[in-house]
Length: 424
Image (cartoon, rainbow, N blue to C red; front, side, top):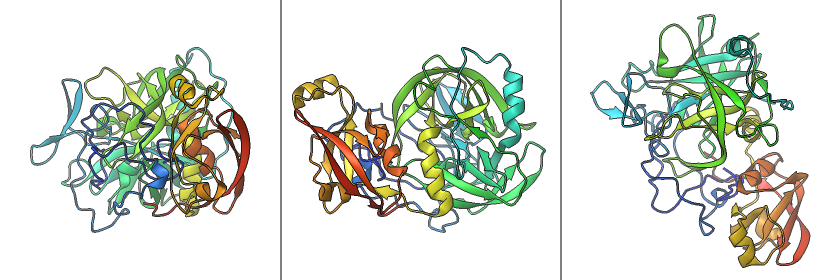
């Protein structure tokens, strides 16, 4: 995650009353209302990463059923889902019901292309025709009809078989298969996972695959009201992927996960997302991926969430290269008008440091609690979500300038980033 509350690289925990990491590969269940930002909460970066096992770990033996998340359900990919009271449920082989998460695919080294969003897609069929060949259905450990199996979605990020998806889709899986739109089924292996961001990269045993085009999810490229299309393995239905459309209905949402991590800066959409969509792409009107469908809100009507692609790209690159992400060592929260008044600062946007871990680049650089970070390197920081993205765009060992506002003074310090410790 980004620095705590803004978690730059440490897995976050929403608060002490959130449930501990439960492991497993399906969607996580959180039956609490998303909390308001807590300036005193530790940042993800300063906390230890979740300890759930990698794919294939014998220690991860919990059922891979659907699990409930965010106000309700994270869409993971089990089948037999029923909608009751606005919450998605999936019935397992034992007749028990649980909620699921969604699956998505990860790009390797990617090039971000500027988005030229139009008011509405003039040709949804054309968008599907462009993107669908690069989208795959993901099944784990025998699929949703098996005791521990699950289903989700992924998307090809490079022709040599690298695929992006959600961590919760493949976490703990001993066997992974992907089905191409041609109907061909191939084996895949986990390249890397990051529980703190709920992202993963897998590698299909195939080459010459069509890849998606990655867009830019940052403003003003993506705005509330922009039209979007979601494609995924909804309910693992026979006959191919499912397509839904809608708009971006909100931005910069915070979504708590059951493992204690908080996903920052999430895109909200009313494009229908169901169990099995996890890890699938949210596309703009030009068929470019702007988000990774990850969760839905239970007890709600068509409120789903996607990880912005611009935040995901640095994570994908780290995972594909086998590299640990860069680490700063701070926890942050968004600067609000009330906090700005309390701190007597003139800036109106930034990330307020709520905690600094000892013996970290942040402490060595002289950063202090209540400093407002407004720039990291060449990246402007407008809120907590930007901290993680900015730090992860660098590599361990890089020395980066950090512009802060402390009271009435604006100053620049230099921090030499290190490897993030205890990466899950």
